[in-house]
Image 1 (cartoon, rainbow, N blue to C red):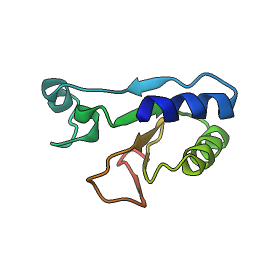
Image 2 (cartoon, helix red, strand yellow):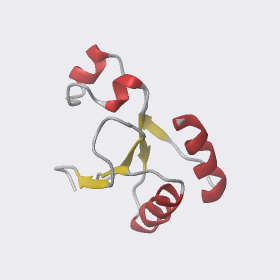
Image 3 (cartoon, one colour):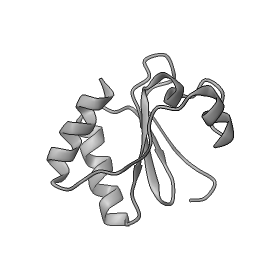
Length: 97
């Protein structure tokens, strides 16, 4: 479950983790230009605020250790995703990166 993974990551990280975007209704997902069928609309994804390269690396390492197999990397956030129906073992970047 996503919330359990986020809590384990927070403990391992030793600092607060700020969630920029979690669950989204379909309307809000469209407003923020989320993809149709986004894992956010199913409560299976979170975007974590992350500005510094060292923090990004530390969080990536933690999430991979915790079994996250869908990760998006943006300039100011990491997207983690626990979908069991979308492709696994993928990492992508966003246009602003």
